Picture (cartoon, one colour):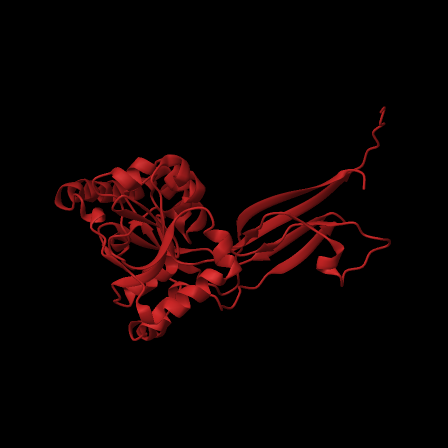
Amino acid sequence: MHGRPQVQVTRKKEKVLRARSTGAELVWLLGQPHLGDYLDFVKTKVIGGAELDPRMLADEWRAANDVYAELERSEDGYADETKRRPAGRALKPLVRRLEANPWFRDSFDNLPYAVERVELDRLVASQNHVERAFTGRFLKRLASMSEEELFHFCLPLDRQQPPVTITRLASDRFVFTSPSTDFRAHTPRILRPEEVAHLTSCGPVSAFAGIALGFGSNFLSAVRSDRRIVLQNGYHRAYALRSAGLKYAYCVVEDVTRKDEMKLTVDDTVAEDPEFYFASRRPPLLKDFFDRRLARQLRIRPMQNHVEVEIKVRSSIATDWN
């Protein structure tokens, strides 16, 4: 085979106005980095946001920032006292099944971890917004869950996937679209013919170069450094559990002891300023989404998540002088 296929992947979120749609309800945590992000989000994504006075929005953000200054005094060290304990003996079969799953193994393959029952209120929040995606009726069901049901809700292996549509733009360009913000391209792979025996071509095949598109493992997970735990994934479910009155959730907690380890697992927001989340006196916490002084409810335009894939193949012949 001559040449090397190149796959270019572009991911973007695009607002899509739908007839008779009132949009999704979002809770935004004010007073945290960065004010410019908040003003831009309201202007471009919130229904009616372009008509809101930016000065009023900045005043709200500033007032919340002042509340955080007070919390640095009244709740200094609060984030360092998160209650946690290992999953109980009765749940060990569920933990073993979880650990045997390939999604889990690929997601937590390089750092020490534990599956634990953690206190929700003291989890550090690096994400400054969360969607209120669950109905009141569903929240009532959450409040009466058994420990096994709670485990499955936090760390699901069997779940319905959001819809995905595929559009072919040209012979070598495709767009994949989903309403889920979790939709993304996975790591490119080389496949041998025996791995995809049902596929045919115009001649004998040596290999397939491909890229999978889909979703993340989506387990409720966090990163711990010293005594502080930063929530990484599962914000919507953590918010729903707290809304239903639950105080604890099952979570995969990875342990980091140095910055190089942190780079392997934390998201970009935490990686840019790890001291703020792991060492500040009073970082933003999950419970802050329920504090009226700090959180604002917004109704946003429906959005779609687009992943565009472009395939380029270049062939060449090199002379072997040996």
